Length: 109
Length: 112
Image 1 (tube, one colour):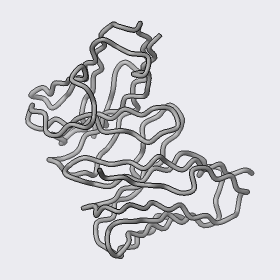
Image 2: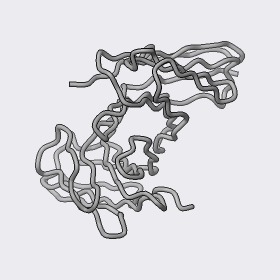
Image 3: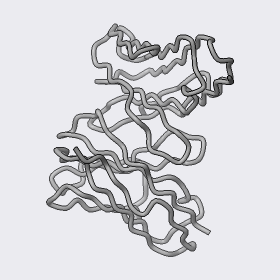
């Protein structure tokens, strides 16, 4: 069974702080996606990483895929209240997505 | 370009009833996957449809079934509803079986 574990599950920080969310597994994935989800809405794709060691940047967000393609991290620099939401990592496996349980981020003004 | 749309957005059903949820895939996408998301959890894979055939299934009982139509839209049917079926049901479309998927806004199902 493929499992993805995210940590931390909850994060409450002040505006301007930096944070990192981790996504770990014992399984190898063909790709890894990060999504952001608002309450009552569907997840919105932020980035896809496919190559071990790959690093992608999206404005203040930096995504990294582990060398062995088993883990990933999301780093947010100078967090803003608009970054508040549920962050989900999802591993691609056999044409389907395996999701972590999510990290709820609250950024206080 | 049209995104993924789901209907209805909210639904309340009684235990034992049956429900049908609908999904229109994003323009150019031919694969539809369905996910169940319980409150405070990540989405769980139910099944995927490609070329109108089921192409992979998660750990869900047979009372969860689906269809895909020639225009790539899809339906999720759940029979004999149970209280634990209360969740947000998400549809995601992708091109071929590329796991980069784009999600609809979901259908919030409440079983009472």
